[in-house]
Length: 230
Image (cartoon, rainbow, N blue to C red; front, side):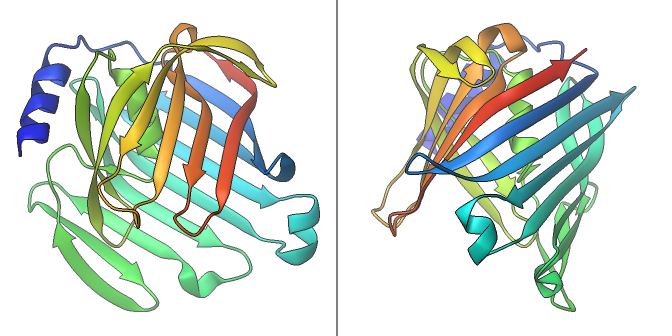
């Protein structure tokens, strides 16, 4: 509760940033320096509505072992300069039974989810993001020192993640060098997954590098290859 309260103060003091109306980006996925996939993403805002699509495809040695394509889609509205998801979906070409559909009912305060033919319902905290809108919500923040909490729904459940500003380095990516805000997820147990994100200051705080560390030892690095925005 103390962290959430501190986060509210940090974000309340931050002015709302003007987000681009359209973004198209490509990322490279690597593990231990070996390319294992590509991610194509698009963000489109039209008036007070938005859509996001993220398509990940296996590449290289992973394609030989696990030739999968995962698509994440988010659709919602823009409220007071912030993204508010209304629908989220996840699709897997090789494993369609793991498809997830979620509807965000903000009036009732619940997320209605469909997974493997079953329907469930979980509470929907205010300002919750889905798996893909979470990264684009950074565009609407003015980073300040301190920590903040984001509630994230993966389509079946809602979890709260705490992030803190680490430093402001200049990072090198295949798309070029960027001055960034570097955030990391605050973990409380060795079983928690770690995550770091670098937001490009001159690119509306768009994520140009993301690193995930699984407790079992898997490390995924996602680096920006190309970006177009307007």
